[in-house]
Image (cartoon, rainbow, N blue to C red; front, side, top):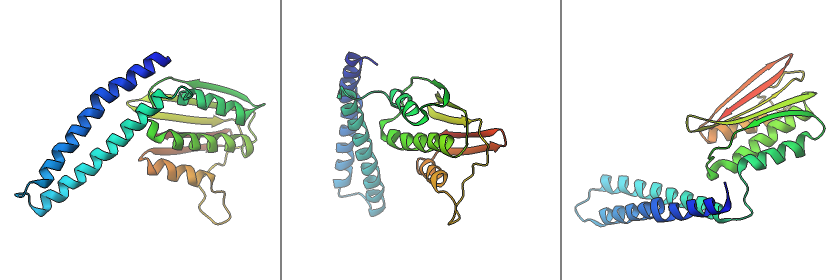
Length: 192
């Protein structure tokens, strides 16, 4: 997305959704202040108010990120990460450009980093494939290799914890995590 388009989107977010959320927050504050509200309804309104505050924070983060000239897209960062980690390996990647919420981009980057490192270090692969695309308003990341297979989530004390951490990150974001590992390689799918 070009810089002028990013700035326009940031302005649209500020003038539209952000202002609507602030107004909704004020209306909830008025409801909280009403003397005829029951204790239960106040508790529910307060919960809604906290959710609105979280949404306002997320929208503000998006606006600031759009205005930052140093910010590249997540897709650009992933492409750079692939080159940094995989280096001399043969890599095929298909990275679609679509909107990924800024709020979970750091987690997605950590997940991709671990999956790429595992494919390079543990699988003894000569070829790695990376697929990133949007599917039904969700983010789909797949990392595959042609290595020895055997990847699994191992929670024993002697096991490696990398995939355990990936699984936990995905679960914290209410996503889906799947490992398909055979003697012909490993495919790991993440949907957020």
